[in-house]
Image (cartoon, rainbow, N blue to C red):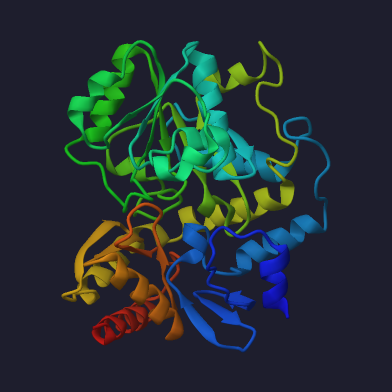
Length: 393
C-alpha cells in the first residue's frame, strides 16, 4: 500500500527508485519495515558524518525543540545556535573566512555565493568546470557542466563559461571580465576527481591577478570527509567564498557560504536585503549542525578517515575494479563498465549493503560511509562487495 502511495503521490527523480521502506536507522545501519538490516556505505550521500541518530545530535535537537523553533526570518533575531555555529566555523577556518550566511541547502548557498561575487565585482561572467555539479536550482544548474541534464530547462543564466578541471591552458579564459570562478575542491559527480599539479593554487593566483573571486564548493568534501575539516586544506588554496552543506547538518537540511566580513557585508545594503531567506539558520537545524561540528572537530574522526581510506584500498582489490578515486572517506570505485556498476549496486543491496551511483560517471560506485564507521564494518562491507563482484559474469 505505502509503496503505491509513494509512487503515486510523491514526485520522483527517476523512473526506478530503490524503494527501501525505512523503519529506523542507527549508527552505520538502516532497517527496513521487514526488519532487514543494511550496512550504509553512502551516509545519505555524504550527509550524515556521525552516522544515523547520533546521540549528541539527537539530544541537541531535542533540547532546542523544548526552547523554541522558528521565530523570525533569517538575520533579524539573535538565536544562539546559529550564532555559535557561525563562530565555530570561523574558529576553524582561515582568518579571511570569517562570516557565514546560513541557508536551507547547498544549492541555495551556491546561489548566494554567486550573487555575492557579482555584487562584489560588478561583473557578470561566471566560470565553472565541465562535469561540475553545484546543485539543481536555476543559478546552480547554470554552472553545472553537463549539458544533458540542463538542456531541457534553458534559458539559464547568461555569461557562464566552462573550463576543464585540472587544465592549466584553460586558465587564460579567466579574465578581467570574470566575476568568479566556481569549482568543487574535489569534483563529485564527475567521478571524485582530485586537483593535480597544484591546480587550485594556480586558479587562485589567476583569479587574484585579474580581480576575480574564487568560490570553492565543499558541499561534499567538507566537514572531515577527506581527512581535513575542509578539502581545500590539502591543496594550499584558500577561497574567497567557501560553500558547504550536506554533512554540516548532521542529517538535517542545511547550507552555508562563508567569506570575509568586507564581502559579506555587501549583502546588507545597496540594495538592502541582498540575500534573504525565511528558514535559513533555523534554530533546530543549527543546533544539530553545531553538535555535529563540535564532535567532528573535537574527536579523532578526521585523522581516522585517512586510516580508514587505507583499509578500504587494502580490501578492495579485484579484477573488475579498475581504479579507486578520491580521498579519505570520499571514494569511488571505477568499474570495468557501467553494467558492472549497476549490477554491483543492486546485488549488494540484496546482500544488505548500500552503495550508490555518481551523477556523471556511469562506471563509478560511491563509497561515502559515515566517518564513524568501524574497521569491522568496513571489512564486512568490503567482503560483500568482493563476493558480489565474484558473482558477476
